[in-house]
Length: 466
Image (cartoon, rainbow, N blue to C red):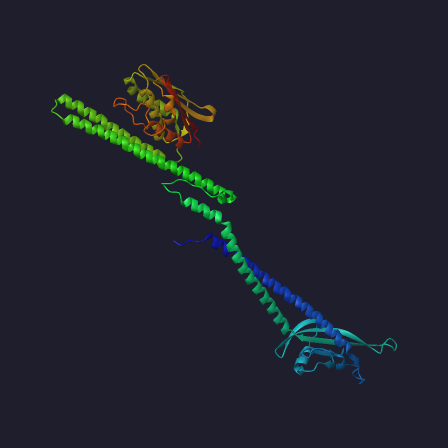
């Protein structure tokens, strides 16, 4: 896969923008230069035409009236001109121009500036009307109207325009080169905090979670959200890795313990010849161990499913109806321990939760309460809707939980009674699964307990939406 440099793209983008600006500027500046030079050229033509008018003198020939005295002219040799009478008769012309060219110049019928090509040479010409006053001292002089057509070659204008355009192009290229070098240096300097941040992030690994961005990265305002996001991401990943590592270790320990119990029971059963009743008791114990391993495996899979499966929008279910059905289903097992399950709250309590998750949650909490309640005790399951939330409370009057154990009860495989025997059972995953289910549904779970006075578990869930 090809890689792209952000710095390179920025430099190329800026240089392309500058190049576009330089081209536009060069075109506009050249056009402006050409317009200014042409305007100055037109003023020059007007001045030379006035000089030509000043050279119009009284002619010796009575029919000609006036003529052009070349001795009074100091005009460039390459310029051409024609002086005509009102009747169109030629009164004077420039030397060095061909007759056809002068005739074509004289054929212009509109006053003003115009361009013309004569014998392969481009000219800028001016046709204007003038009046020459002859013999001013005699009765105010005699007015002699004439038509002046004066032209000058424009080849030097094109040359000057090309030179001006070349100057602008060379200046733009030098500016682009200087800008590119300066931009590369500035970007390398300004992007240093980003490179330092990338280097700090690349040093993070499974073995080392330390992420220490440099002061430059921390002082850069645009990098603050990136630093925060990286820290939050690493925090979550670290917790996930640690949780997975603990889960693997605890699961291996639990399974190893169960396998050791199975192995020791089998060894004990085969150490000597036994009667049928002894074999039956041994197989019953093995069955209990196998069931415990099966329960442990199911709970581990359930916890993994709840924690790892992506959260999906669940349909609304009636938590009250589900709890009532579950209480009737669990009451026979509670009767074995002489414990009564009592429900408080007959209304409909809708929450957005998968039915399987809700059943696991309520079943775990009620089963735990029944298991730790003494005979003739009562487990109360109450439902309510305070402050726009759905609240379920499971209360028992059992042995309670020591205060020192409360911070750890949601940890996987944690048991308040580390010496729990086969008869008490349990895997230490029930509350972990409950916590994962509640958090998956954007709710909260809290345990209030005191040793010898019972336990109350409070689950708070948002009301069903949609």
